[in-house]
Length: 534
Image (cartoon, rainbow, N blue to C red; front, side, top):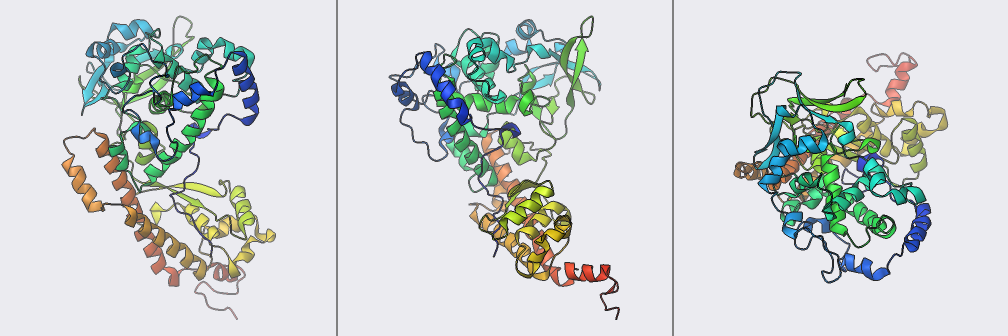
């Protein structure tokens, strides 16, 4: 019988949708440049790694102990004191600079009188500094003052000239830039922001959470996604360390934990409209916006200057604001709350977008594997694996039509496999959107019921227990434990809804209309009541 792998499918994560490792064809050129620049032997690389094992969710310990993650006797140190560089609260004087003249002068920030940095539920945020009406501009930042990959070319002109890093992706360039900023005292312009990102009162990517908070996600889809992130980033770091850092003159200056920190800082702060792969930027001050599904502000592009040639990004009020109101911004309207947590380290506790991602995969041992993959590709879906957004709740509406079709295709075999013949190839995906046969529909329902029950049984707590835990954490709404339990609860409620939905579908199996009956009716061999016309 075909095997359907449920949503706990661990695969290489999509970092900004187009993530890929440094291509093997680039390695020789990078290695040659590294040798020409006097790359040290493997001793320094081993010191940076410190013999730390690569297995497991090592990132759970990021942010504890020595942030360099290596042998302290040989790993270079930053001039900045350790307590200031990682895990400390940013000095209040630095935070004031974020809301006063320092930022206006450094980044040419305009219309800054509409908001300032504040704190809510123990987290840094932007608040309205005056009453405002819908349409008022609260913040105006010149696009030229944002942090983009152009900064990489500015900091490392030699790397651009020799062409050895031509294939380096935008996100990797920005991560290297942030690593450089973090280890170099000379970048005073961005220093207040870096200190704020390092503070305990700023959101962190879940890969940088402590072990106790991260373990609250165990057995969840979120935990599996983070494991996939961790595995991919470990591999990428090894290549960055070997091929990139020597080329840009940073060999030994940064360690694995600096790389993970820089990735987390970029991933959580590259907000729309600059969250897409080729448009990644960090915008001063926007990092302090709070995520909400009921936003009161939005962003828009504008032009200023005498000839309207200076492009800016404006933060605009969507509704009337009172002085002191927290500015709320939907980080990604297309993603459910679990994915927002994985990408941005936050979760809307007031009105979350419930649901989860259902990832289905055709068994590679299926004798009809190639035919089924062809059907998926012709339908415009990824093969052999595809993910579907599943809403929280119960009823048919929570299961996307294409997800049901995918499941029916996965379980298509035996007497039903004739539908994969070439004569039906243009129509087979349409056939899958309706029940195929009682046997096929039974397999779909039984496999999903079993998967949902097994997934729910793996959690160490029940839905009711999670609700009690959240109630006990009511006074710590901004803490990561609350976010983790909320994400876990959201997933369980979605699984419950899926379970109830497929149980309902199973009960309807005797009353459904299947392919053979529909076909006979189309040939006028059966009437609408299913009776023979002869």
